[in-house]
Every structure is written in structure tokens, then in C-alpha cells.
Length: 218
Image (cartoon, rainbow, N blue to C red):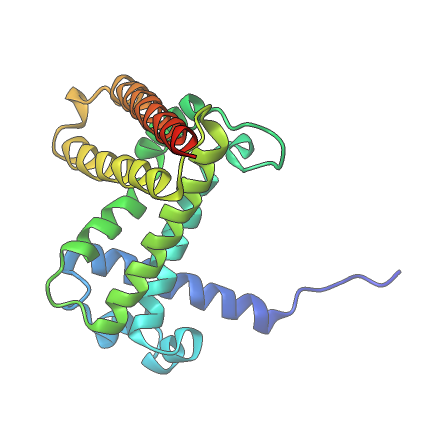
């Protein structure tokens, strides 16, 4: 019976990639993106700089991989029920509560996004990567909101609610980092849930009134 042995080159390549990602995330979080050189990352992971370029192409490519890897680790903390299923309404309260739990388990993603976003020396290519990732998160959040809420929202309204949620998460994450013992994550994420429901009702009412006015003029 033939046994399937792992491809040692592929295994070693994945180990090297993992070591580079871990070292880059650690150094960028401690020093900032601009102050973290490829040479410093190579020294930290004990691999040549050529290995970093081979895996990621550039420092900007490495930044994208670091953020996407931390986002993947964040999403792994969320239950499979958080995935959008066609024809099934998401439970908004449950999803926000799951985000609160993920704060404790995998805070690195939000920490890195805040650090990179506040960095003033981020080069244009890296900034485009950050904006692309942020826009993708915003788009997914808007899709979830339109599927979860009773009200029929416009795309602009769903985007506004998404921005509101992201702003809350980023701001409260700062408070959690400063004094985690005094932060009741579940309680404040429930406040966020209630605020989203109230805003959605307000938007829905405005949309309904607008439709009625248009119908009366027609």
C-alpha cells in the first residue's frame, strides 16, 4: 500500500512563510510599519531577505499578508453561523455579541489596523492596501445588515450603519486596550445593537415617507 509523504519543500516553505508573518506582525505592532525594515524582519525570523521577497514580493505585499492573516485569525473565532447563508436572515444581536467575544480572543487584527491607519508615514501603496481591506470589511458588513434588518434600507443607509459599527468597534477597542477590566464588552455591544435597530427604524420610516410623497405626487 502506497503511503503519501508530505512534500518537504512545501512544508518548509509554509514554515518559512509563517515565521516571516509572525515576525513582521510582532515588529510592525511594536515599531510601526514605516520603522520596520525588511532587514529587521529577516533578522527576527532568521531567514534571508530574499526569502521574504520570494514569498510576498515587497514590503507592501507583506503588510497586506500580515493584515489578512490577522483578519483570518479573527474570523476563525466567529461561529460558522456568522457566515451569510442565502435565504436565511442573520441574527444581528448574536453577530455583534460574537464580535465582542473575539475582542478578547484575537485582538491583533484591530490593533494592527488602528496602528497602520494612524501611521502618518505609511507609503501610498501600503495605504491603498489598508483602504482595500477596510472597504471589503465595510461591504461585507453592509450586506449583512441589509439581510438582517426588517427595514428596507438604501445602500447609502446600510453603508452609514456599517461605518457607525466600525467606528464604535475601533473606539471601544481603544478603551478595552487601556483598561480591559472596566470594559463590559457584551453590555456595550448590546447597546450598539439597540442603537443600530433604532437608526434602522428611523431610516425605514424616512424611506416610507419619501415613497408616500412620491406616490401622492404621481
